[in-house]
Image (cartoon, rainbow, N blue to C red; front, side, top):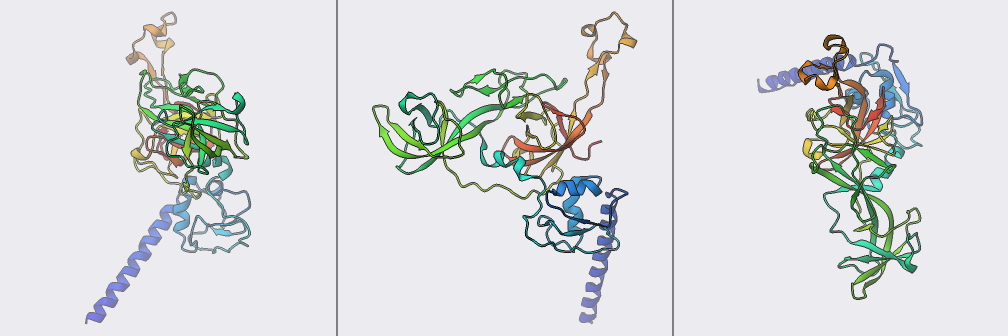
Length: 388
């Protein structure tokens, strides 16, 4: 009797699993575009996001779609030449490619490599050792030059260090109005805040003079090894620059130990664990631009690990709707400054694109704009990727 019950229980589990698979397959199938093919052959230069965008209504759902197909062992390891089955009710099968190329990633690593390798965010930097001068009293030092460092305590001859430069002070954006007002929080050579034009980042600033600091960005400029330690009355340590791909070093650059950090190279796009705060969830900065960014541009976001954000989190980006003065209703000659907010017309938010997080810090993160219908501007809102 026990054997019969055991067999019956197993049979019920199999039937239940098959039913769930059928329901799940049907639900996922609803996300396909009407004109999707039965198969797709992966090509060199593809990204998972691009492939999914050709046949899915929501490209960030590709991991769930492909994991629901048991013929795909690992959706992160798909190679040029692989044939992907998209016929869920009549599976065609996945043919392996030649495996002579690197696996296809969610995003082109070339677009984010510098931000994985050369950029980090810290809570503070003023206590770090710094370059006080360069040999021969040069104003700049390059690879092969010796630079003199103060406060590099405990250094040993032969020990390697990175030379980094404070570039941006990221501040929480508390914006209740339109999102196009900009402030600057860049640093000069002393690591002091200064308003300048044309630096790599342009960012929003909190209306308060001292809003919550989300982090200080440090950019790698060079690297070197210690050749002499604690010389002179002020205990100056000598560092010889040896990074063949490095940039010019100047007085005020900071020194940190070389670390062996491992970064994510495979990304699993997914919706956020919870919707971002509508008041503070914003695009903080746009890299290599004054105010706007487009597809495959890097942006800094005012959300981080403490907000439940991790690598692969996808947000939609929105321009915040403004409160407009209705000249028809209020009269042609009445100025907008005399109209109370309650008498203004609140316009809807406007969709701009989608962004995927690729590097996360505690209070902020970096993301890559994956697709857009209009330029992404500093101060734009972050919402759930399915927001309408």
